[in-house]
Amino acid sequence: MLKGDEKGLAREMADCLIRREGLLTKRWSYDYGVVWRGMEQLYALTGDKKYFRYIQDAMDTFLEGDGIRDYTLESYNLDYICDGRQLLFLYKKTGDEKYRRAAALLRRQLAGQPRTSDGGFWHKKCYPYQMWLDGLHMAAPFYLEYALMEGEGEESVRDVCRQLILAYTHTLDSQTGLNRHGWDESRAQKWADPQTGRAPHAWGRAVGWYMAALVDCLEMLPDDAADREKLLEIFRDMAAVLRREARDGVWLQVLDCPDHLGNYPESSASCLIDYALLKGARLGLLPDGFGGFARESYSAILRHFVGRMEDGTLFLAKCCQGAGLGGDRYRDGSFDYYISEPVVSYDLKGTGAFIQAACERERVKA
Image 1: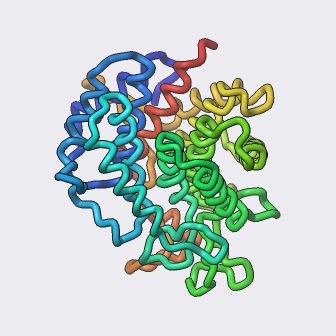
Image 2: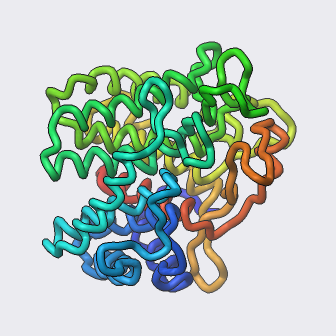
């Protein structure tokens, strides 16, 4: 793995991904959105239109009339919303109405998304009464950016904040200060605690998803928004807990089981969390001292997870391929379940998260 704090790794990792994967066009999938978001940030950092075209050329293959290939609104799947941020990006850069129309389709999904009794989005229609931390990353930043772009007003902005606050409140384990992966209002799932409805454990990437969503929303949220201070308090509280829970500068697959045999440092969680901390420090959202810690964590990510093949190809290793709760192949949310999921290299969502973290690191001179 890499030693030191090398510069230019965002571009190098992105270029290696482009050579390896080509355009991402097979399916309308949230992991593409994580990569495209990294390319968007790299374009902003470098001005190199190659990264703009990489997003646009792939996205154009999905737009069919007023629809989106491989997208089904009636599934009410929050994962499908993630790619919407690049629709907004392309519309703002080009003014082409096809991107705005496609984004409006995703906004219509959110307008009809099933909700818990207190107004929280179900993660998917097929996961009734459940809020997962993952879903906040998929939906909240798009929802807020769209609402601000279209001038939807205070009601929509407050609804975005409500989603973030509800997910945090319902999943919070007050004993550890960590947030569990999900919450089932109905308590019908075998993974749900019968008293609290919470999942059994704090999965690292789920917490990373939420932290990245929170910092992106705080960046966009108007200073006079009613719930801004509450979200800022949540962000700071989570940052303090995660600083405490880091192990050699990175984060584990199961955050609340640091001493359990088989637990391991996991790359996608570490990249997402460090992205949020680096960005939060840059924006002045975190107390003094977090910037230095976040930069040290980035160096630890390089040591633990980033390597080069003999041909010079850069890659990210030690990424959990996927994890969830319930479903047809029932996932019980136990510690044994989380550590049983495959651990891979070259994962798109992990690599995309690294590119985002690397872009943030390269924005800081120190």
